[in-house]
Image 1 (spheres, rainbow, N blue to C red):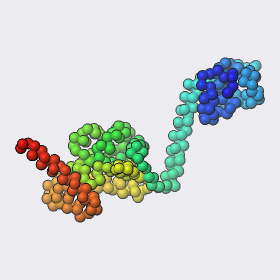
Image 2: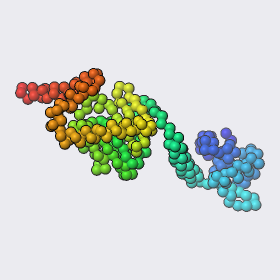
Image 3: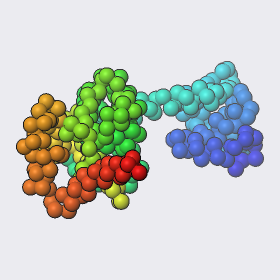
Image 4: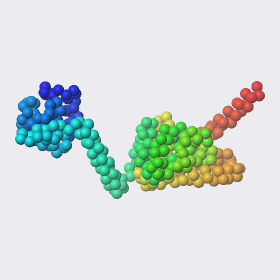
Length: 303
């Protein structure tokens, strides 16, 4: 650390300037100009015990970077650009560069057809990825999820709607749950199978597909985990599942009594026929709980 540097936190500033691409001499020259300016290359080299040629080269580079400006001639003296102006400009140009680069490389990735399936573990990581998918959507967002998992993403969906994305939700939950979510008029919401009842895996499952390009399938169980992909085949499967959930909800809403008469409440005869035995047992347990609560309420009222 050079004793001539009097600015508070100069040692740390040297490291951070290096992180921004400043050479050692550029960083030292800029910080010394902040301490005392204007100054010539000779004055800076003498004050810092630095080689004049290296200081002069650094100052020419700093002028090119917009970090210092010559304010006189014969001899040339330099003054620093105010830090807020300098680093604010660097931040803006870097952000613009990164945005452009991300768009360019994303296009290259899509052209090459990269369609890996990425594993994601942990509740926080899953919610972060769901938020990322929502934030990146521009055309449409289709979701199948329980209300308590969807609640964390209401603001993100509102912003997506403002961008013009259409939103469709198959919700596990009640009418009251749907109203509490307040997704607004831009979202089309269906209660799962017309009732929103959480049978089998509904309470833990979250599926989202966006823009016909990407999907995330998550299971928020004891060990939350999921997969994300841009694979066209998998995205199509997710969208088809949600689309058929919409078909089913519409049909049940229109012909509920006849369907219940044919297949039983909660389509129980179909579930018994096609669900794996362990999931069907879970369905039976969850169907019994409301009946048990009702009987319990009935006993309490007669006491």
